[in-house]
Amino acid sequence: MSTSFIAKRRFYDDKHFRRGFSRSGAFTIKEADILERSGYAFKELDEAQRDPIDEIEQIFISVCRGEREPSSTEEKVWLKYKKLTGRKSFHGLVSTPKNAPAADDTSTSDDSADNVDSNDLVVDDD
Image (cartoon, rainbow, N blue to C red; front, top):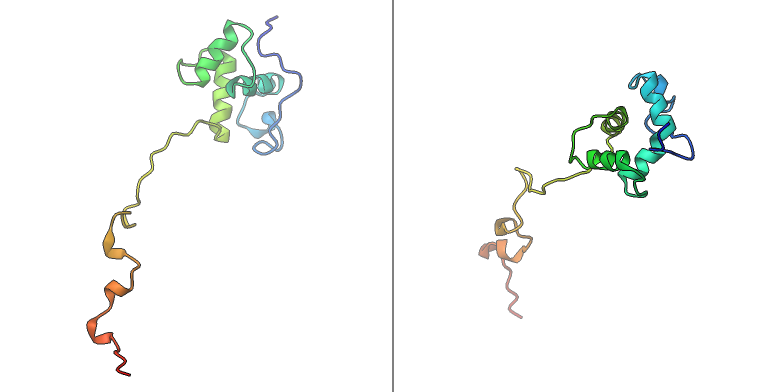
């Protein structure tokens, strides 16, 4: 028996799979068993909360980082879980929406004094 992916407790995700992994229809019985048995180890390795104890766990970490393609059942199940729950790293670009004015656009300035017509001025001659 392998010493890889040993977890002290069973893994459940009541937020995304309220009725359990096996009843969700997203995982096979074998995949659900792997997640329940080793899910905490997968999560800790993926989030760098635990150091790998052997080469199998080191390879698992490189798969989670996207450096390698998944080859083992454990790697495929964890990536499937992350895909279904939206647990993935986020890399985004920030841009201005098409209809929003650019930040350096002075034509939409809030200076109301600049937009006042000279006919609207009232002069007090006291």
